Length: 244
Ligand code: HXC
Image 1 (cartoon, rainbow, N blue to C red):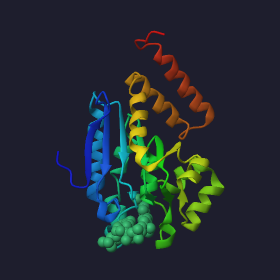
Image 2 (cartoon, rainbow, N blue to C red):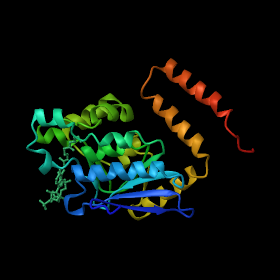
Image 3 (tube, rainbow, N blue to C red):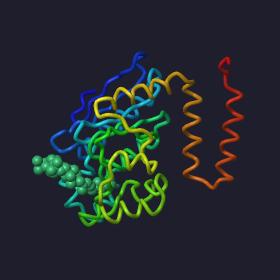
């Protein structure tokens, strides 16, 4: 399909990595609705494609995404948001069974930071900047910022980020556990592809179960999560096992 707000490609030596580049450079990849509809479709299609092992979402050197599209959003009313379900397409991304890795260069602000946090792993380039600046424009994070950020970085740091609107840089983000690794700007994408390829060497079934199990850690009590893990673990013995 021809996309207008994203570009897609299949990369990696084995052509098993789905690459999605957000592509509204003039608006710093602000996440307008048409972009999100396309992103949701691209993620669904890669998720359904048996040749794809993992998915990467990236932007450009200046911006991963500078947030929801303020121009599109500014005249929304409470009743419009409630009736239309503002940014409902975000669920296509959280429902994806395959690993999604965010490769963040430049700004990941507001909805951009929230999109990165929806992914399973965040890699960043040295110049990346993260933040939840919604408070500057009289609103609050609306796509997980108040819920996922504390789970990544703890309450005190999350409060500081959400209540000040200040940006944090890539190294700080790594130190606080938001980002798993930082690379030079021009190495970020190739390192992210390597990570996706490494994941792609494993059984797709087991990768999916492992992702589901880690995600349970954010949904349940410890006891219920451990039970979930145990039954999935036992279940893996019913799959065709690989040789040692
Ligand atoms: C629409 C945006 C945008 C946004 C940037 N642009 N961010 N358009 N929505 N979120 C546009 C600008 O209007 C401008 O277009 C062009 O991109 C370049 O931006 P500049 O501001 O000129 O660039 P710069 O001076 O380098 O500053 C970069 C910046 C700044 C610090 C990232 O653009 C900025 O503060 N952006 C807004 C960040 C923000 O508040 N994000 C949270 C949004 S609320 P023109 O046409 O004027 O040249 C949110 C809520 C999420 O995300 C809720 C649920 C999803």
